[in-house]
Length: 180
Picture 1 (cartoon, rainbow, N blue to C red):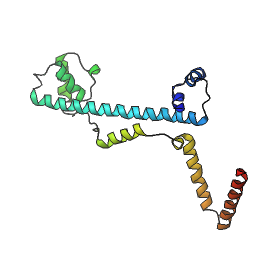
Picture 2: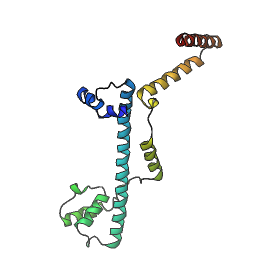
Picture 3: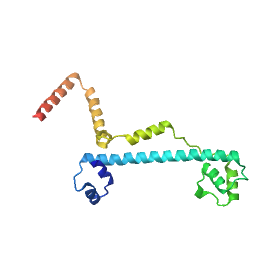
Picture 4: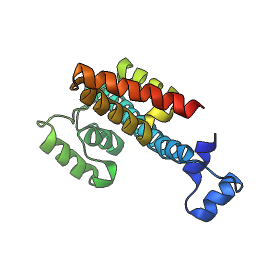
């Protein structure tokens, strides 16, 4: 919870008010920054989901419209839907019906804008992302620690047997010295 306080604070005064004057640790700050990144990733994925679902709905409505009416029978809103399906946002469309018909006829051979449908796999990824519990290993500190560990193991693997044994002995002595 403390790390969530860090996500809201902007500047020292705001941070002081948000935390009630309590000191946030470095871990709290790293968690707060990571939480911001995580929340932005969730928002981005939700926006993609919304776009894909709206596009699928628009496509279904446009196909039904094309099956039920001829181009000459279509009104302004019908043409607006078709042009939007073909990638022209309503704000960029002509205002007059005859101009919309002409625009449609000019573009009909190009085909509609293609988009990837929102799948069950996408939904599972979004659910997993929403429910993910962050810990220190998810932060910059955790990633740096994993990288250092990996580097240490690589170096250790290149040591001779005697060097490895000497290093392990030093680590045991260090451990004993720090526990007293």
